[in-house]
Image (cartoon, rainbow, N blue to C red):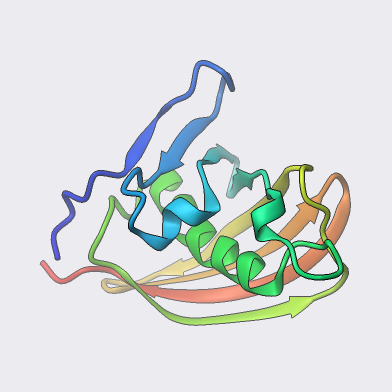
Length: 148
């Protein structure tokens, strides 16, 4: 797998100061989550998505699987925002999540991600998923960079 996958990571004029992070291939899982936006402020990458009805469970909250998918993709969006990863070829080694409360569809979710440490091949990260100012979940993850 190469670093030339067709990810979009560019300024979004509809959201000044934010980069659009998207894999436009509708056959890939990322497309199910929709476009995300990334902004780095200090040592924190803010990654946003707007959950839709298709992301909900029977309680009309955002499904835990959709939240986990968002957390996983947020690790990569954040790493791209930190300029420590381009696109493609990297893998999630682990992702641990703690769900705190339900999230509502239609209101933006934001993952605030920190890069704790970078080694030659690994990125150690942690984050919080919020909706408005409510903490929805916390997570940690390790990403292995692609081989040269």
